[in-house]
Image 1 (tube, rainbow, N blue to C red):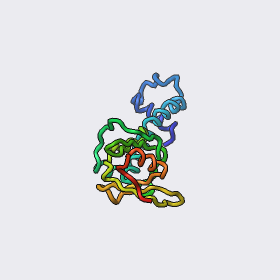
Image 2 (tube, rainbow, N blue to C red; image 1 turned 90 degrees about the horizontal axis):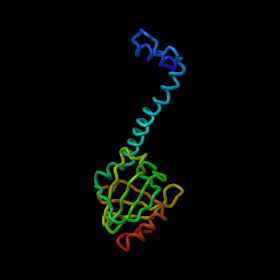
Image 3 (cartoon, rainbow, N blue to C red; image 1 turned 60 degrees about the horizontal axis):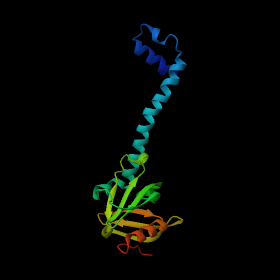
Image 4 (cartoon, helix red, strand yellow; image 1 turned 120 degrees about the vertical axis):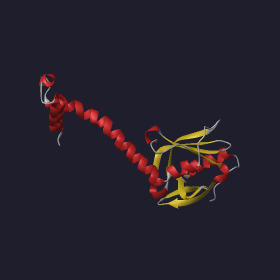
Length: 174
């Protein structure tokens, strides 16, 4: 159904086939131009939310968030716009906010990626990491005790910053 035929259908439905006076000055193309942006602003956010929700399930973010509840960090050093790769190469390029304090790491995503991605907190004692290669890149593969089968791969420069913030409570193996 084209947008023009949809607007004709809508006009007939709205007026019940009688009194087209409401639309007498409006052409069907004008109605189509009005309905198209409205449809976009309704359909696109629903479509986007569905895709982002699916990625959270595919990558395993939801399982990590279920295993590790979130609480607000009191005084944490945060690294915004960070990247990570999870299970099945689910990429979070420049979409992560990683915060670290004396207790552990806090993970969250940017607002537009939030559907299906609740933030979560992992204590330092439950994090292990090893430097490895993933494709052509060198990464640090983080593993969490409650979800050991879920990889959380970050770049070494980010892992080095986290080691600094951890003050000896966490290191990754080379």
